[in-house]
Length: 381
Image (cartoon, rainbow, N blue to C red; front, side):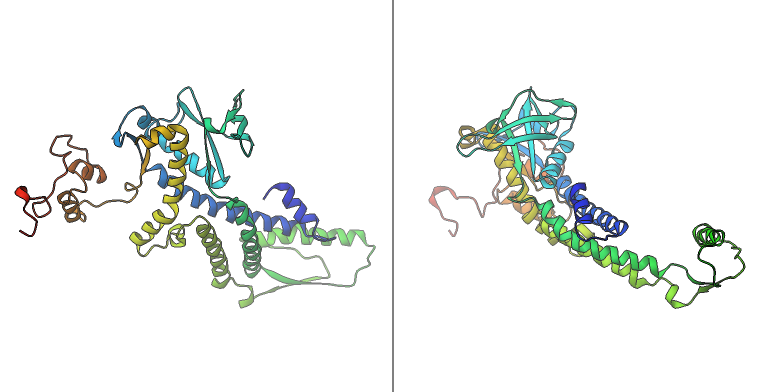
């Protein structure tokens, strides 16, 4: 929520307003909303940053300058992990991210002006990165421009989260009141115009009782004619219900954010029972969509139509995201090699081992029951 919008909501709603209550509600909304969104974004961005960006040349994977750029050093000030983490974070948080190429480096823009056209390439001007501003404009076909959705997800979430913020403010207020110390002060009849007496009462209520409530061991001296009786009992004690209300509302808010970014809520909250199925769902509905956005934009702008149709393009391998226990997949790995689906070196790369780089480890093998038999014999024969 922008400051202007927040102040407009505060002062435009009624003739008399409680500024402290409005500001506290806005503070809780910003805290819960931003915390939940940042957790979701960091989870997604960190996951994609782990992926291997494979560069293909005429249908075969090669490791050249482009591979080094995408997987090691996109620019002089960022490694690939930092770069792709920032790209995805900006794309999710601001619904767009602009990357320009300059002197062989991929630079992420902090701010820019986007002029849209119907029949001609869009223009990007006033492109800045930290304290540097590019003195030229960029055409749409010169840049990588990533957009996440047709509508700003974060802006839509702000409207949803406002309701949870109001509920959270009430729950926090209830929690504070439940544990507060309460008492009754009785005073005799006092002339209203007695300024000395009124000043003594203001000092008693404003300073002495504050110290009395805050200090662990305290004593307060009451003026003549003033009696104080502290209220005790079950009503003045905190209960677990107030804490439970706060936790439940916060969990509901996190659930809405997770659903907006296509994340299983249990993954964002850390309450994972069936890890494999939850992670598979996360990869299928969340990560694959963002990977497709990146791959499509890079291939059409960085490589171009002619190269892509010739088999030279970028592919992102998401298989390295999940942790692999080599002992649990030994039988499956053997089957993949025996069926000729993967070669030995490819399997070794998938489990994090160094490829052997020999003729036989690069060869695709087939067991005899799957291989064609010589002399025209069929498999059944």
